[in-house]
Length: 197
Image 1 (cartoon, helix red, strand yellow):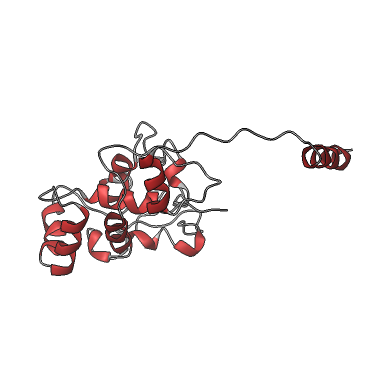
Image 2 (cartoon, rainbow, N blue to C red):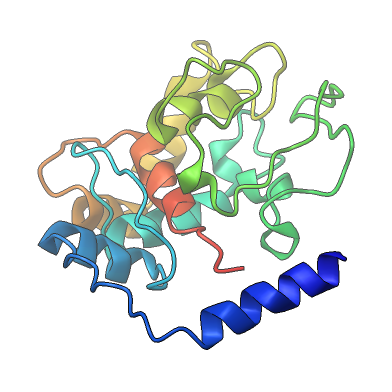
């Protein structure tokens, strides 16, 4: 029965002489975002906050930070330790461990297509933008994931201050900012993880 209905729907759609009206053209910034984030035409461009528009420089910086162990409080796992690209930016574990060895209560969420989610973190569904949500795995203490705290945040940031290549990337990504928040860098990378599946 279901096959018949599906076949009927396909035949009806393919034999119709009706044409769909052309879609209204995208605003220029939407077209630019589509290109920067490599979003195919058949997917909608997600909502992007005006305070952090994506650029190729931000995405490159976020990609590098994703794999850099220095962003972890004790320099053990990088973000990519729990968000592996080959697994849709998840880790395939039911309950991974944080940087201090503590078993987490839930799995690491896949980040592919995270740009389309209104919330991402399971720790607090009131966080509505990636920039805020990224603070949970970086600075959260219940559970401890990357283990950056008030006690060691200065040390963690100092690891990047002495790296000339990072300084150049930060300036290119955030030319109007003296520092540019790490969450803005990483959120641009997460927005670029849209998968065209």
